[in-house]
Image (cartoon, rainbow, N blue to C red; front, top):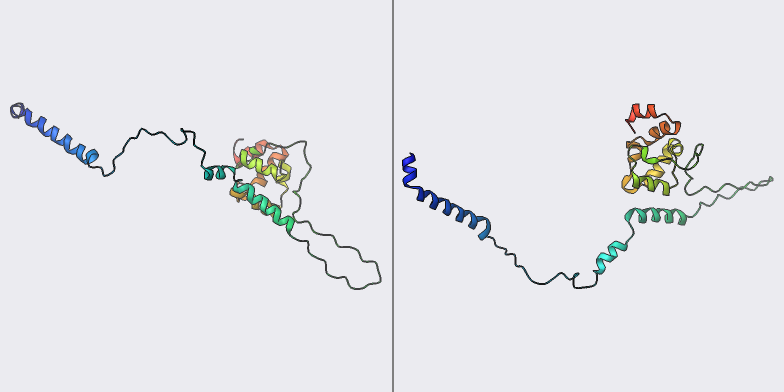
Length: 191
C-alpha cells in the first residue's frame, strides 16, 4: 500500500487542491451579497447633526416615572365624594370627615434616619431608590404593612410589581426591625 501511495503522491496533492477549491467556492465564492468597502466616512464623523429621533428618545422621561406621575395626577384630580344631605334635626350636625385620596405610609416607631433597605432579599439599589421616593425608608414601616398597604405600594412599583409578596418583604423586615439577624439568616440565608 505504501508503494502505491508513494507512486501516486501527486494524485493526492491534486485531489487535496481540488477539494480546497470546491470548499472555497461553496463557502466564499458563491455568496450572493458582496461587501463593498467605500472610502466614505460616517456621517457623525463629518460633524453632522445628531438624529432628532434619537435625541427625543433620550430626553423622554422613563416609563416608571411617567406612570407614577400619571397615577399621582389622577389621584389629585379625583374629586372628593360629596356627603349625603343630612336630615333636619334639632341638634347641631357634626361635619363628616373627608377621606384622603391615598393614606400615608404607616410608620411604627420611626427610627432615626433610614435603614439600608437593600438588606431585604429582592431589594436592589433601583428598588430602594423607588421605595424611598414613595416614603418608605425603614424596616419598621415595611414590617407594619397591612394587605391594603402592600397592594397600594405594589401598584406603584412598576416593573417590580409582585416582589413584596413573592420575596416576603414584611416577614424579612420584621426580623431586621427587631435586630434579629440570627432569625433572619436562619429563615432567609445570610445577609
